[in-house]
Image (cartoon, rainbow, N blue to C red; front, side):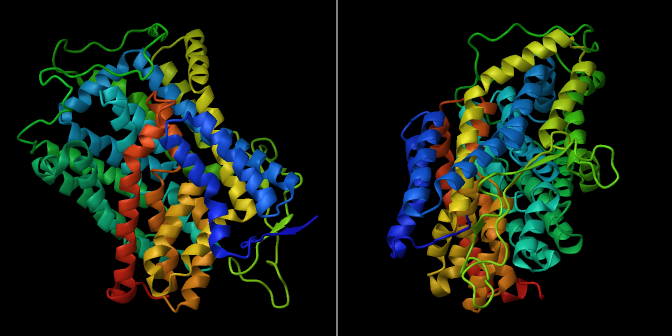
Length: 582
């Protein structure tokens, strides 16, 4: 039985919007109040199901199917990425090689501000461009905590840094998706995003440092901030405006890291800044995040290369210790490359066809639900979209980013000479450690998918469209809301891209600006979406402290989204020359 979404079930825009927002407000409120993430996510999911069925008249079996599809997506590919990112990090810690990684980073600069710029911002940007889907937060948070950052700051800084690059995401996927659903040229959208985000690529590094050390800390290392953020902003602008969206973050991440490292050979802060609780004469040992009951360190069958002890590290030692992370970078980049991913998925004539990618049409949901006006354009004389919403779950076990990380862990185990028994034992331990986090992610993605298929997301989005000439300010906030709901800039673009163009057309606003702002504003919601918060909590051993992380980053997310709104207003009415011609 077909079902057409209803966006105003209570014949009141206010009450319908409040009902649609109830599950999300409940989830964030429970997390902020200190309720455990699994329990908060389960309660919010139940409330969303009740709201969808009894409020928005969604068939109960379709609501159940939507929740199940979301839960499956939460476990795979999202949970699979988190599990393997933590697993690889634990392998390097247990073999003692992360101690060398830590010391090599300290050799570049012992200053915590510089380390955050290199790892959270530069390295995280590369990982976002190569893989996306929570990979940069999972890995950079784990690396920062290994370097000695407190768990809260390791999580919070990784989330704040994972903003400016997200609009271009994994090889440009968010922009490509936005172009597809809006009907606008992808190059024009890439250029528009590239004329907004570079301003924030300059702001984010300073914001990151200020969060750690205050504005006095920013003053003490502004040259490094300017070089790191400025080089990334320049590369981001040039590549997005003259090459396209696919390699913006890869070029920017690698380029800014290389330029910043070279710059630090000639300049260092006059005063080395560390967290107040750190001793000024010692460098902390890696934090495990869950010290109680940890297994004994793994014992490689071959010791690492010899080097100079009690002081400087040999080049061979550093290369040996960093090799797992080099392997990881290579693997996630290769797995993100469209041609390689297509081969792994079993393209036409490929022997893997039907084996490496299994597509399941969700019963009771696939091609059953129709969107309607004003969210989508509808044919004349019809009350619904021309085609129904597909509901297909792709189990691409071979081409998944999580699989590339797992294979990187396998290759790293060979490199580090870890026996298969120790390898398996550590994997099972990691799986046990993240069990509740995986449950939480499944519930939260179930909530996100249910919100999407029930039309509650569209009801929330339509509330922004009644702001008239102020809409350019609220257009990025609509993207922010979409990412906060779905956990993905790509999903938010698929969700609201068409609505943004329709609204821009009705209000006689520049379409490419308004549509692109959905993606550029959406990136600021990445740090508060439940999925990212859980990923950061797992990577830093803070399962159960998701509410604390949310409180840490919420203001930053809202403030940066508002700044993007102000920039969009200026470009809509004053700086119109910055908008690319269609």
